[in-house]
Amino acid sequence: MPSFDVHVSNHHNRVMITVAGELDFDTCPRITQLTDTVSIRNRTLCLDLAGVSFMDASGLSLLQSLHRYTEAEGGTLELSGLQDQPRRILELTATDA
Image (cartoon, rainbow, N blue to C red):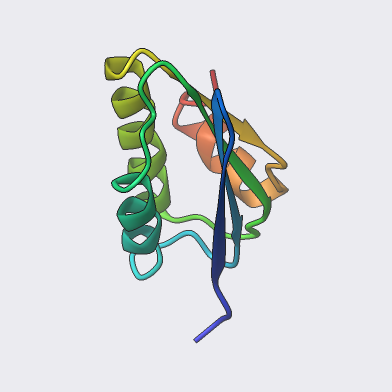
């Protein structure tokens, strides 16, 4: 099984989650567990995906769910550091906006 690591840093108006490894069916629940424990109300949730070289449909679904959740909480979702394969998934599904 490939290595996977996720780190959360909580700031006044921003929650930063840094992910390293594959974003897939096996790893997405770990991110969900973390996002369920932090308040995103009126804050920015920033996902640093520079360490993610592969994302499957589960990863895409997670990102879509986080987008809906942050909007419902009055916040925003920002993605940074997208590598080629995850970026291509977002482009092919027209969810890169």
